[in-house]
Amino acid sequence: MGSGSTVTTATFSLYMAADYSATDFTVQARLFDWSTDGLTVADYRSGNPDDAGSLDEYTLLATKSTDPTWSTSAYTALTSESAFLTNVSKTGTTYLLINSDRHLAGNDPTGEEYMMLYYAEDATGGGGTDRDPKIYCEYTEAGATQTEAGAATATFAATATIGVNYAQTPITVWSGAADDGCRGYDLTYATARSTGAVYNAGAVAYTIGQRLLSSYYRCHEVFVQFDTSSIGADSTVTSATFSLYGQSDGTTTNEFVMEARIRDWGAALEDADWVAGANLGDYTLVAQYDTTGGWPVDTSYTDFSNVALPANIAKTGTTYIMVASDRQRTNNAPTGNEYANAYSANEAGTDRDPKIYIEYQSAAATRTEAGTGSYVFAATGAETLTKLEAGTAAAPLAAAGTIGRWSMTTDEATEITNTTATSGGLIDESGGLTVTDRGCCWNKTGLPTVADSHTHD
Image 1 (cartoon, rainbow, N blue to C red):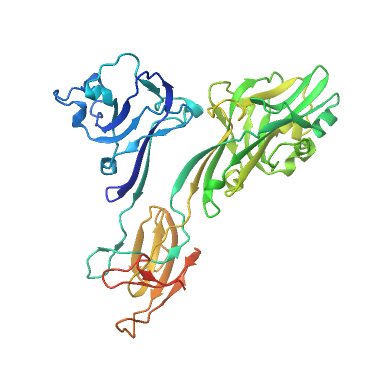
Image 2: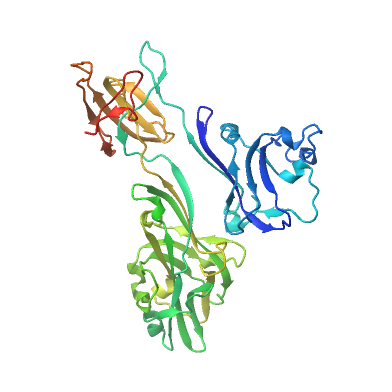
């Protein structure tokens, strides 16, 4: 975050594994730096206020009662105290201690009054962070600086509304219950490869690949959907990873490549959504996984290698994906078993559902310039705006993280009366960025911003 930033929001959340509370209590999160020697028995804090270093001596940051019962399928957010905002470590690590209010109050338990919580060693998502303790923070960075010859450095409000993406946002999207599979089934491979129908609808696991069993050829295709509409049309997807959780590995003959392709199959899967093997290549390949590398079963997610997934995420709607074998596409008939099973969204919970992990840059921020003269600005990924007098930068700024370079001229105010004045300006160079709003802003004291009186021109 940086020492000059200001934390505006902080929320601590935990993911419960099991609840054994016969008596309800309040979970308390306190600020406690146990980093000196790593966690040791000496870091245990007494609940007796008469003891030195007892729990009550450490700043309370967040609380949450166990009534109502916490969910075992989603995070539970603790209610933040005002002290949380000022105690997030902006240049280092924030250390917390979690305790029961009844421990501090000296209330003897009459039975079980505890819960089990997931922590960072939880292996969900193949060692991911799906259930790890987390803090969600929002913060504002330090103001930019204006430096002119012979003048002091001062904070200022930088220029116009520009189309630059700054914030990198990570999300995990789970597939929906409408997911299903199709199967081609016939004594001849040509027919099984070309003609199929919805198969085993609503099953907790899908089959991907091909089989030859009891003289019948079987070709399996899987169809999954992800609601990715929250990303927004103006955002940019920078990375995306498609993952499946293995349920069984049936391959005994040929290994194959699972190919994930974009295929819009609508609200519900129908027989007509089957894609003949000869036509699979007509659909955009976005990710793939070679089973030669093994197919982990009931242990972790398997990530597909990205081909073109970020560019094909539906930022305002649903991302539809079809998964099939490359050998079905290339017309290679199976001689035995060459398939694997993966869990579907119909399996209880979301711990093993198909998922896409996405990182994207959110929509543009707004900056407004006050004053007169011609200036050049460089907006960087750290949201720092550097202001230079026009003409001092002979070439575009090339600092790491630079997003764009542009310039504008603000006219000096003239014809000033008690109630009116004349001014204006010109955006001389947009640097290839999108200017979404233009105007002038003014006030009576200090530097004006768009929060003051302003026009939209």
